[in-house]
Image 1 (cartoon, rainbow, N blue to C red):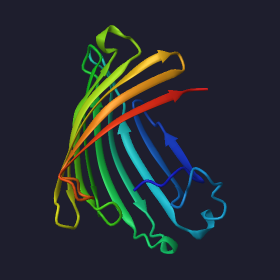
Image 2 (image 1 turned 60 degrees about the vertical axis):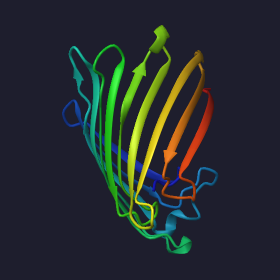
Image 3 (image 1 turned 120 degrees about the horizontal axis):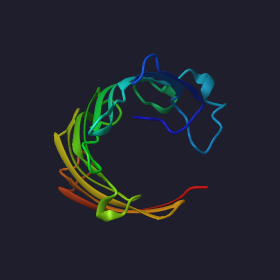
Length: 198
């Protein structure tokens, strides 16, 4: 239930390496296409706190371990209720460019109708001998807060080609089994993204 980019502020504290604390808030009605000055004063905000550790373990590599708390005010004008979120996210390079990850999250399910979400998978840095490429495979299970469909499964794979120093191309595929929203039993999605950095 993250809003689009909007007016807000965030602070990052690093009291002792590799520990950190990130805390901030922003306009819950934020939109990337507007300035947000007309909605910021409504008093509807998105708040977030993240506590984490980002160690570099000798013989393995970089790791990231995070605990996140979020809260979104109700937006009466849009008829949106409030939403609470707790998330745990872990990823750790284990050598040879292999990065397993695991995430778990809980929400009230007021807005997204997803109560629990568990995801795991692997990232691969520099696959097929191509130093700047990246690939990933993942699977997730989601549990609905309400409704007839209670469990959703998603499987995904992608490969990001670094075509030039500022140009990336990423084809991918998602398979959604028993989607929580919609009438189909299985949905397949082919995706492609072209990213140009200026």
